[in-house]
Length: 152
Image 1 (cartoon, rainbow, N blue to C red):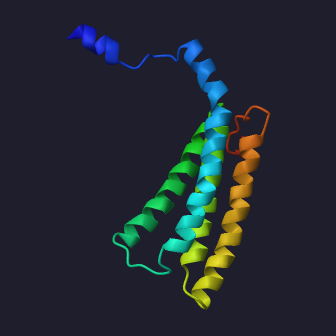
Image 2: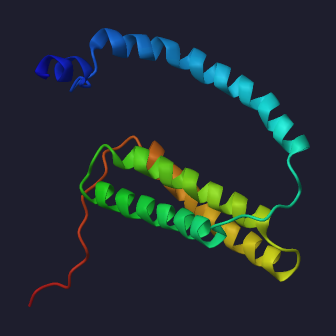
Image 3: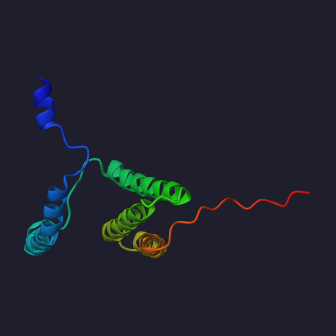
């Protein structure tokens, strides 16, 4: 049994040869996926119905916003700790924010709901841009503390 567990267990650290192979293949796999998604998107655009009834609509929307909140909280904590992982967290948070705007605007009813979605979307896109700035910041995150009033 222990031999089976050892053989099927994931390595604790990536093997250097495996990692090098994954790095070599990454551009090809990602490029092929990008090329394949273009006709797939065209097929979806021409074959899916314009409207549909969906189950769990409220849960899906609340889940997306909770995912955005989790991204903000994670990025804040990691940035506060001067972690190198704050940049990827900020990039993921920006991505979720852009997705949220996309779906908010495209699913809004005409009139006031659409205007509201566009206005809030502009704010959220500015926030996503801020997250991108955090993500590409080459300097180490700076540990900051809340300003305190001088003693005395």
